[in-house]
Image (cartoon, rainbow, N blue to C red):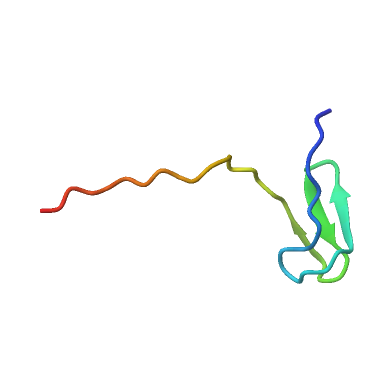
Amino acid sequence: MSERAAPFYCPYCGEENLEPLEETGAWFCHDCVRSFSLKFLGVGAPQTHKENPR
């Protein structure tokens, strides 16, 4: 089992009353009654692609 970072607050209401939903890796907020999951996208700034001016 790998360790994961826990969110400190709900991204919808900002409250801290969160419970992990182990079967899906998601989180449940008891204050706004929403479920959500977090996804790590990577480290560093995204590369930008310059378009060719015409």
